[in-house]
Image (cartoon, rainbow, N blue to C red; front, side, top):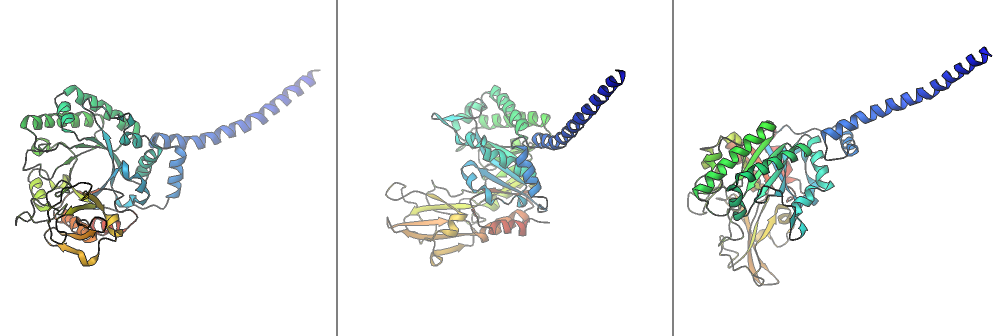
Length: 419
């Protein structure tokens, strides 16, 4: 009887051992698999760990260019369909454009009973995966916070409690999305009075100080106008000169849809001889007197404008009244320029002052002349050379996607900005 009991105990031990060993092995396997996935989830929370793992494994031989300058690309939500053409190895930072702010410092989520497109895309899987991919491929990912209505800006700056609300909202997004930077895009039209300029400087000081206390390594940048140094623009450059890590000068749209004459969107020179009302050379000479060049980022447009004009064959032709009969000014992106059959070589010219090409054509459906000033390989190369010769911190591209699937401008980045 005792022997039978002993045998039963031994058999039970054997059975338990046979059961426990596979369970231990199973738990070990689960641990081995889950630990990396948990790490990836914590490291890149915007994408699934499986997505991150697949990307990392597929890019084991990935090499990022050794860049001599910062190369920043703005990624507007309306061009996310072109994201597959991004060369991550040629960039240092991508800035998503944008989340719109209201006067209370909150993100605008609904406009006219519909989801705001910037907010909708921000919460899409497309954008979530892009954040993770950008960071996995060794670039920084930043978010642009935009306020582009004068009344909204005035109300916001007059309400310090809204500043704190914006700071709280910003800190929350930085933490939950693991962002590397925040870009402020406050575009106030026209001149601003001294009170408003002072209020913006106080807000910027409060914003930067508060954000940096929580995350000293976060990149803080601000977009500014070309004329902001010499005119009463917002912001007052002197009032914010020591605050931001990057000052991104929007050195484009010198001539724009509302201009009286067609002209170069980003002329290198021409201001000194009174040919153009302002130019890039003067812009950066002004800025460099206030801000160290190694904090200045040169905004480089990958686009120009196409206007209906009085006489297309005469440069700087008067723009016709824009209406359904005459037509309207339209963006001519680098990609459109490369494929537009209206731009015939015999009607295209190089402007030496602007360091930019222009063309003219007659719209066959309306018989209205059009004049286009745009960017090509030669003009972009001149701007990259300018950034190098003036020892600027780098360039920012407005915007990723405008060059479509053409690789020429990526090749220029490699030629001009690699060590």
